[in-house]
Length: 79
Image 1 (cartoon, helix red, strand yellow):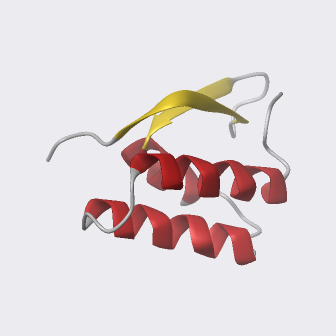
Image 2: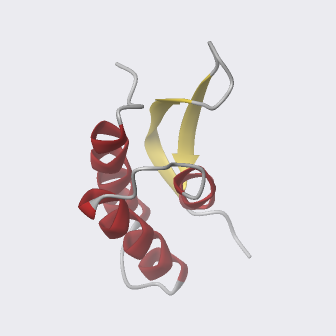
């Protein structure tokens, strides 16, 4: 399976203290989303966006946008 890249990484805190992850693809976004605990409405939208990207229904750019919103909702988005 090809990696679905997006242009600017979304930087998020990780479960390891002091470590930031620069997510720049759909596969990485899906993996990070599975680690989060709040799983709010924006998390659900981001997970669905990842699924849709895997099936060719949305672009990686759309996933990036949804992932960034979910990271903000989760409180892990880095500036």
